[in-house]
Image (cartoon, rainbow, N blue to C red; front, side):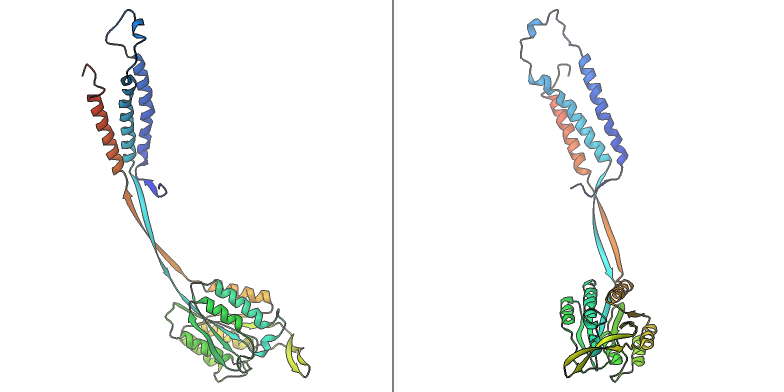
Length: 332
């Protein structure tokens, strides 16, 4: 009830010190009072019952002090406040462009590159409930798995179901980037972002990656590129007559291309060489692309001294009536 209560003139509370001083003065004065009629011996009055008015007359002083206290608190001007907030959130539209080619099954990440990237991407989506998200996958070709949506449950379900072999194998980086740009180019969001993750060279597709990079710049889309793979060699899956075997093969990532795509669009290029490094990269992108929230607060003050004044006047009126009727003295 009193959580939002403030006082405009709190100095008036010092006036409350008058109440204990007046009480002491009242008690001392009461003790010094002498009877109007004197008797040589009061023994005969000892057995007479005392009227309730003997004690009740102190009620008049109590009413005066209560009125004074209420008036002092009223003069301090108690005020309650009500406030409201208006938030202005700058939205960010983000497309995750995920490579699902066969090389993403290499086991230099645990359990492999694809599963590791799916895990950190899911954590990234969960940490940004206020943004619209979309998902594009690419291999030998590309397609939109999830258009821009605020339903992050759909995003998480689709990410969990990604696997190699959904489309023709290969690495069409240009097609993947172009498809992601097509999903963002008409967006009215303040910030438009693509996070493109791949582990190889551009070996397929019909769109030149450098042309796609210029398209991203034209539409004001920032592209963060992530190259996934250790340095040197890594265990790649190879199909043999005995089933899938893993052989050490050279890791080849077109870092020059990924750097050019990122730099042209105002983004950044990252190299992920382990699960931990990949997680750190997504955390860094998360910090770089944060929604800006502007909060405007409206506050209204309400004067609360009116009831106090009303109660004080009521007590003074009661004191006046009691003094003139029930507790009226002979001298009056």
